[in-house]
Amino acid sequence: MKQQTATEPFFITEEIGAVMVAAGYVFEPPPIACTVRLRDVLERMSDAELALQPGEIADQERVRRQAACLSGG
Figure 1: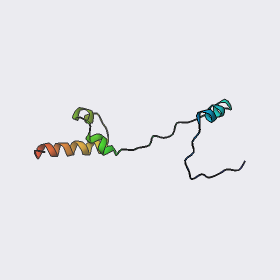
Figure 2: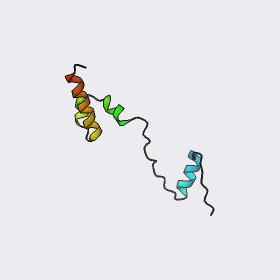
Figure 3: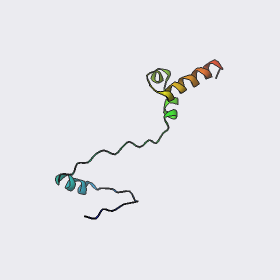
Figure 4: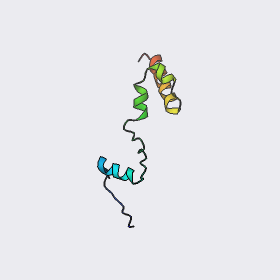
């Protein structure tokens, strides 16, 4: 069997997908594409929601909010 290297997106129709599943092919979900920066997501969270978020970027957002609050912004 010759393996091809495709540079274009590959789409499977529902009909072809059903045939492939019937033949025993197992589909795995694609990785989630990130379309928004985490900083932008955290910026839109309330303080209570942000408090529940772990990680360095969440820590930076908390520091940014505290600095804005102290400076009157």
